[in-house]
Amino acid sequence: MTDTGTTEEARLRARMWPLYAAGFTTAFGAHGVAANLGGFTADRHQSLLVLGGLLALYDGAEVLLKPVFGTLADRIGAKAVLLGGLIAFAAASTLFALSDNPGLLWAARLGQGAAASAFSPAASALVARLNPAAKHGRAFGSYGFYKSLGYTAGPLLGGALAAVGGLRLVFTVMAVLAAAVAAWAAVSVPYVAPLPKTRQTVLDLARRLADGGFWRPTLALACATGALSVGVGFLPVLGHRAGLGPVVTGAAVSVLALCAAIVQPRVGRALDAGQIGATAGLAAGMLIAAGGLAAALVPGVVGLLVSAVAIGAGTGVITPLGFAALAAATRTERLGQTMGAAELGRELGDAGGPLIVGGVAVAATLGAGFLTLAALTALATLAVRRGSDRTAPVPTPSDRA
Image (cartoon, rainbow, N blue to C red; front, side, top):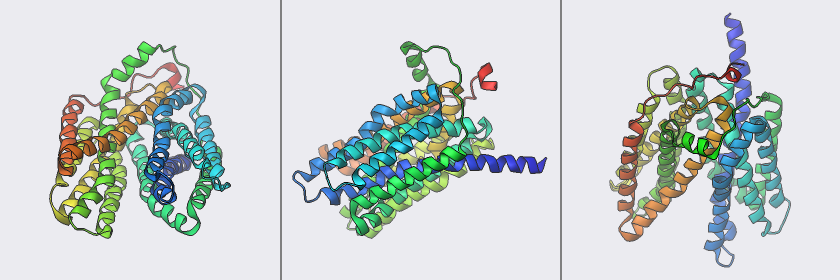
């Protein structure tokens, strides 16, 4: 009996590793290139405008296409969308890697963003489909851990590659990585057939997305990505204004990402063990993140590090709980659509957080911007806390099959 259980666990882990690698790939693709675009565009006319456009292409494609590909994953099967997205990502990366034409960078970056829009929600849906509900916390915690590693390693590895062989080498490595993950997933990830489902009208979709089981976890995830984006982008600015060197400010950002990565698997295991509830945990994570944003006003290195630790820890608490709550509140045949829509919410938080802080900073001070986002996150906590922990919907006969 024990041997059988151990074999099943090993088989499940083998199926999950390519999905973790896909999460790492999308995060590494986002930050590995973005962190090195400034050097590539520095000697070009209107470099800041060019840089902004290149950065917006990737995120803009994700905002528009993730819900579309999530729905497609439900219709034709998540594995097909996963593999198609990874292959398209490799092809888009190869487009620039093999060319000396800087103009193709625009097409390559747009292609990468569109491809990531496909395989990211498909991977999240497969994480939910391949794991029993009782292990969703651990599964999403591990998936978030490797995705956080991609965000952390992206600027470091991308910078090292760019220093050796320029931006073309960065794209070459990404092409090889995506192709390797696609081949690995094709062999190791099982085919998960799409489930039959009743016809859904636009009104049905609107009602489902307006349900608290969807928007409360999505709101928490949006707040988490907003705080994380602000921490990565603006904590170094505060450190510089306080007279701290780039080593200290860079270390603070690394601590933030490391805390987010370390916390996620532990929180996921605690959820599966019944030690925390999803709703209470989401609210706690949001308050921790809000406290981290407020702590940025404490002068000197102490405030910088406390802020980084709290924002990272809060994000690490929210991410696995949010996705586990979404999976619990969604019928299996609609998982791809739900994950795609939730990813859209995260992207909006990723863009909205810096816009709020930057806008307030222009009118007042950067510290006021941090306080504003902290207050908004704390207010959002009240809306999330009003919910109750949800269990999975009553399964349909197709769910049981």
